[in-house]
Image 1: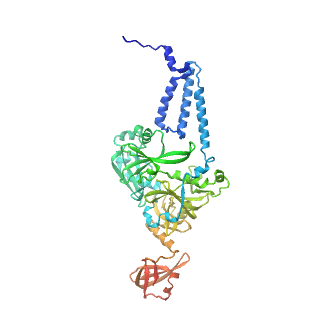
Image 2: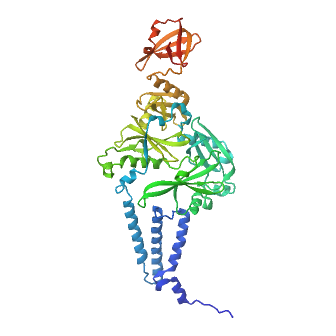
Length: 548
């Protein structure tokens, strides 16, 4: 015979009011349910080095204390809330102390050593011969081109938006790529069974945009909801990982992938942010793999984001002689350049900006370096590999990027064009800024090249190739001519003319085949004995000549 089990009121009360009514089980259950809900929606990492985790704990303790207090008042019992109250106070105190301990004032030297910077020569800057690696298009221009391309696809534009663009290196060419994104919850719900259909590929060199349609659609993306949300997918797989910089890339076969940088704190609990690796996620299948920093595949371009590299360089350049030196005497202190702009209220503000260079199969972030006084001149540049964090400093005095942009705008001031953030290029051993000039509608109208060392030397042209050709010719005017590759040629002179340019006298000759050659008059004084109609022998590369 089965024995009937009955639970009387007193037993139930003891179950609900543990320890004689002092610690209540019902508030504990409610707090745990709320904790699960908060973790599901806000996804804080379960990691003591995460500030979000400490705030998560503190919030839960506050919730438990409030619920226990309400429960005690209803039960007309005095709840023993000392332990959770003390725990909350302890968490707050520990958090504040560890935040203070992790600051630069106590660990200036460690902060200055996070980023290793190597001295380099100007040869590390891409030369004018590699102009196809120069990505001049800013994000706003890429967005316009991408939106225009998507706008022609009625079945796509009605359901999806274009997400954020990322600068990557694709088949040794710099490109900007952005996936489509769901346009809100209802359109996600309507399209979740099929997924995201493709991505936009923008070529910043020839200013073209293409839409790439995928055979297998992307299901796990940041704009999805619930279990399809990519952040949630990563958090469930790696509950303790501190990750960020989640962005879209494509491999060399054009397959879509998402990349998330994995972080750690190397100083105290909360200081000295470093990248320890990356998580690669296939948005079609949801499969993912975590890589250590030194083992990330070659095709991945961005593991170390530009803002972090800028912060780490500022720490390297300002804290090497101690924290107080960076505040007061500022001996040997430098910083990356900042760009002046206006905020929403019309007030003048300065913010850091940087450009990109495709180099050695990777994307390198570059920006100028100036003194901490914030003047308008550079003392050099840094180039940082966004995949490996390899950073090089090139000494070069000259105008900063903002001054170069203003100089280019001044060259066409009657048109009112606005310069984008420039790229950096090596022209005949001289650093130069090259940038696009846009009209009020954000359309690229011209290209400009500015000499870094003499930023009043500016050339503009309707195409990038012509701009670089004109600037190279301008720079070469003041340099000795390398005649080792010249060919000997006998010509009949039809016309001779001299012109003055930047303090130098140049001689131009036209032969009977209508070819034009030039040379500095001081280098071809034999031309004093030559008249039109004479036959002479010259050495030339097709443009510059010397007398034989």
